[in-house]
Image (cartoon, rainbow over all chains, first blue to last red; front, top):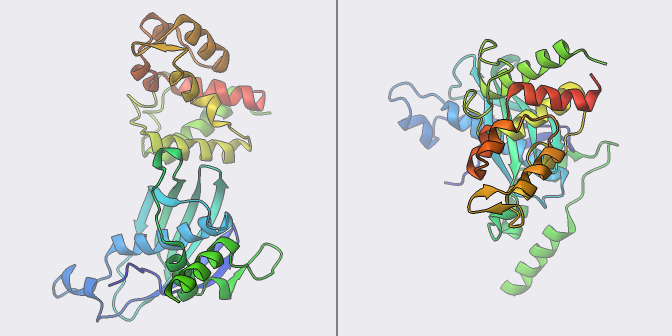
Amino acid sequence: MRWFWIDRFVELESGRRAVAIKNVALAEEQMDGYGPFLPLMPASLIIEGLAQTGGLLVAEHNDFTERVVLAKLGKAVFHGPAVAGDTLTYTVVAENIQADGAICKATSHIGDRLHAEVDMVFAHLDDRFQGVDLFEPAEFLRMLRLLRMFDVGRTETGEKIKIPEHLLHAEREEAAAIG
Amino acid sequence: MPTKEEVFAKVQEALMDALGVDDDEVTPEATMVGDLGAESIDFLDIVFRLEKAFEIEIPRSELFPEDILTNAEYVQDGKVTPDGVEELKKRMPFADLTKFESNPVVQDFGNLLTVSDLCRYVESKVGA
């Protein structure tokens, strides 16, 4: 099972906001074990999905050159459960992105209903974490494509966001190595 | 230009949001780490909130002079040297270092900063 807790991006405005969706299905593993006879989408995995949406929004702002990690949750308020068949719409707004991290406000909606509100702090790993790679670049690019980030992503002026050259380079290197 | 009371109110709000503490806990004398339970990552959160609330830029080295505390020239046997303390005073004119100066153990430095130090720092930035 891959650790994807969003299905795809539907909007991304570079450095400002991102919207992603997560479809909750009864066949998913977490629906069995979390509450027997009461299949709910665990709040922790909803937070993970919001963090993936926000983390990639923050990382995109720096062309994916920073290693972005979720450092802290401010508040996390859930107004009700999410159940099988629900489509969760995650919206993350970047309030402040700087050299050492970012703060973001996130919401989850089920249809028009506000389902959850979460404040998040992301940190960029600094020199104390030298040699720590979060992702293998070519694999990371595949993930971003799968999530359709480059299909929907736009710059502040409305142009399509471009795939950074260092990720394309890693992809070419990988292809050459495979032969 | 905000008044000192307005600065305190905004700092208090930032600390309540960042640390999940009540308004009566955020007194001017409260220390950030010891009394309010701030951890290192909270300072990033607090700095972000203050920058937004006051529309200021906070260079990290002004609030957290780690370069002095890790400089062999200014630290000996886990204590900041008199020269080092002078550097800290120059860097942090908003902080009251009197108590620290009497026994300047590097490890204790993290628990120095009080709410009123933070307010004084912000005041110096916004000209309150």
